[in-house]
Amino acid sequence: MTRDKQIRRSFDVAFKLQVVHMVREQGLSVSQVCKDMKLVDSAVCWSSNSDT
Image (cartoon, rainbow, N blue to C red):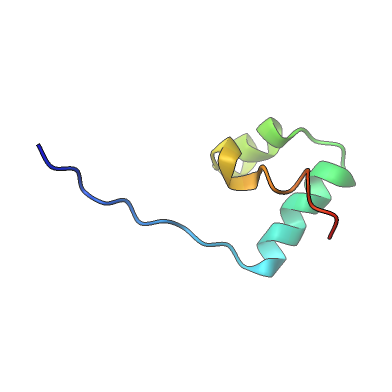
């Protein structure tokens, strides 16, 4: 059985800043942001730990 490779998405700086803003400034949870942006939690786990 072979598995097709999934294409890994990449996100530009503007998108990352938007996610950080949603978590820090708007007070949304990472889970809520993921639902809103159609992402998996691991795609934005850096946002709550980042100091940028």
